[in-house]
Length: 530
Image 1 (cartoon, rainbow, N blue to C red):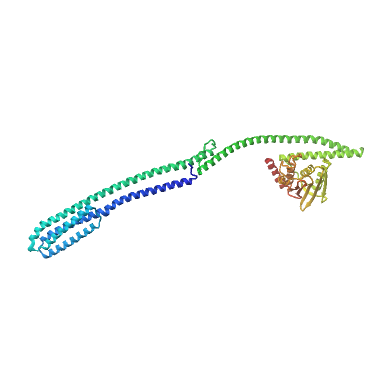
Image 2 (cartoon, rainbow, N blue to C red):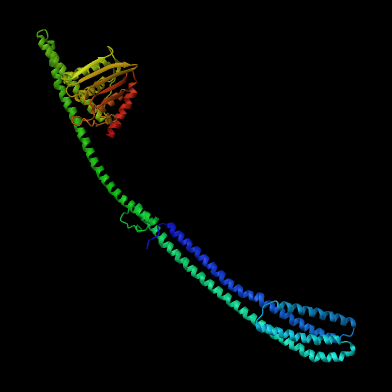
């Protein structure tokens, strides 16, 4: 059998059941009460009026007989006239009672008794009228004899018939009353039985609603509480139902399965987090070792480089005795030492940037000379590169840390050379724009995909087309930190396959202290996030 599809169907069914039960109980009660009313109507409309009219006839006929006897005893004419008037009134009352009785329905026996009474009463009335007509004093003795004989016999016969009719009517009235009482008792019993049956049906409906709706809902509620307490090994019933409870049960099954998967995912994430924590700890240890190694190596390099530079200076001082060739070679030695020292200093600064220990030492310097020195250094490092300088002024004075800016420009030039295979042309320009110093490095190399431009200055991020070229992904990140440390901005314009142009805008006379403090805090935050 196909189950109903919704709780609304259950509720409509229960409502229809209650409505039908009330309607049937009401109609049954009305039917039983109408039967009782019919029996009561017989008593009210038939037997009570019959009894009342017959009672009136008994009373009025008795009074008429008494008035007849009184008429024989009266001597005065006035009393005689008054008695005759009284008898006339009684006669009218008897006739009125007869008419009332005749308007009612009667059985055959009642009709026969009543017709017999009427005949007997009419015979008595003829005798009584004769007595009344012969009642003057000259015929008083004959009237008394008639009153005591024939009139008495006629009246008794009529009274006896009326008594039989009254007894029969009272007997029928008692039977009707008994039927009414029996009908009332039966109606009360049947209505009580119907109410009991209705109560049983209501209990059955309650059990049906409880079994079909209340118990499943309470069961689902208990399952939800158990799931909230992370108890996943529970059974969910009612998923086969086709109503809202079935939908809730199936949704709860999905929720339970998702909760189980989520718990498993949380355990997996916790495990992965612990593994990442271990790897991060190891990475920090390795970074610390690397930093210490770089510091140690840099220190060890500085000592022999200082010795080499000192000997080169002695060779230069021996210019009076030495030839110009030795002087030229000593100058090349000192230039190489300077280049090595600059590379070591850049390596240390990069390490400090990564560790969040960047030292900012501002000073006044010429940006034009700084850019030219960076270009000269990279010409010596990469003899095959073509670096073109374009400066719009003899001097570009500004305030900042020249070592950090030299390292930032060196990174830009290094990237331009590295990503311009075959020794392509690299153009470096430096100019002023109002109160800004603008330096740009433009190459005609492989370019940068458009999708990579937004993340280009992020830490450890490399372009998607640079995977075949060796790199760490921190060069441009360090450039951005240095430029922002000086309160400036860096932008890039690039098209894949056509080259790139990096433009740096630095304030010539900016409040470098606040900018430096802000950038230093950003370095520390970036270091923690990384």
